[in-house]
Length: 255
Length: 207
Image (cartoon, rainbow over all chains, first blue to last red; front, side):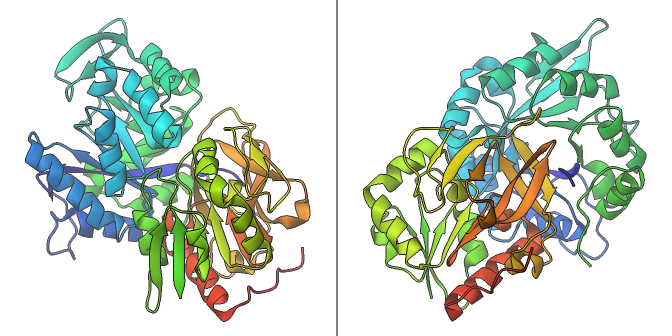
C-alpha cells in the first residue's frame, strides 16, 4: 500500500476555450474546459491542469471565471498555470478554485515569489514549473514559453526552487514537447534524484509505454499528458492499465 | 441542516462548500470560531498552516472543544484534522486537544505527500461503505494520536504509517481530502452528513 503514480491531464486554455483539438466523439462542445474537465475526471484522471496561454489581461480574467465554474463541478485537484506574475495572482487563482498554482517565468525573475506563496498558502500548492532544453553541454532553463534562454541549469534551478518553497516540480522538456517520441528520461531522472519534492514529467508522451518509462526510468511521481489524450490516440483508462501492468501502483476507478 | 465551514482565512473553500452542498443543506462560511458553533454540523477545512489557523481558533478554542466533546457532529479535513490534536511541529499555538497527541512531519524522503494513497484496514464504516479505497492527499505533516484506538484508518507514505482517519464521539477527522477524492470522496462526505443529520454516526467496525 503506497502513494500511487499519477496521470495529470493538461488543457491549454486561451480566452476561455480549450485550444488544440480535443477529440471526444460524444462531446458536442469539445472546446469547453468545464465539460472536458468533468469528462477526464470520469475517465480516471488523477489531476487536471489548466495552462493559461491567453496573452491578454481579459483572457486571464476569463480563465479565473472558468476555473471557478470548473471547481464547482470537478472533485479532483485542479492546478492553474501560465501568466502568474505576483503573489496576488496565486491568491486569485486559489480563490477561484485552484488547488495548486504553477509558477514559471515569474520565479526566474524573482524566486522570492515561491517563498512568499509557500508561506502564505502552504508549499503543497506551489508548483515550480521549469522548461528545460539540452544545449549540448547542459539542460538550460528557458522562460516565456521557451522563447528566452536563461543562464540557469535545470537541476540546480530545481533544487533552488525547492529550497525557496516549491512543493512540487513540473518539469517540461522543450526538446521532447510535442514530438511524441517519449519524455526526456535523463532530464527527468536528474531532477527527480536531486530534489525531495514530487516531480511531474512533461513533454513528449506518444504512447502509454512512454508514460510508464517516465515513472520507472525517469523516476517521476506523475506524468503530464495532453495531446495524445485530446487527439483520441489513447485514453486515461488505457494509460492506467499500462501502468498497472508494469507493476506501478495506480488509482483505479471503483467498479 | 446547517453546515458551517470554519474559515481560517487561508484560501479556497469553494469546492469544499460545493461538495457538501445539497437539498435541505444550508452551507455557510464563518470566520468567528464562537459563532461557528451555532450549527448542526461543523467542518474544519484543510487549507492553510497550523500556526495561523490555531491563532484564528484561539478566541473560541475552549467553546469549540467543549461542543465537540459534547457531541457536535464535526468533520476535520487535513489541517482541520490536525487541529483536533494538542499541538503541531508545523507552527505555534494550541490545537483543540480533543484528541491527545502531536502533529509531526512525515518521516519520508519525498514531501509533501501529493497524490492518491490507499486507505488500509478502515474501521470507519463511513469510509468502507463509500468505496473510498484511494484518497487524495496534499500534506507534509500528519497526526500522531496518543491513543491508537482513536485511529480508524491508516495510510503509508514510503515507510511512515500514519493516521488516515480518526473518530471521537460524533467527530471524524481525515488526513486526506474527500472533496478532492472524486466520486467516492463525495459519497463519504454525503454519508457523514446523512449520519450527522440522523443524530448518530454508525458504530465503528471491529478491528
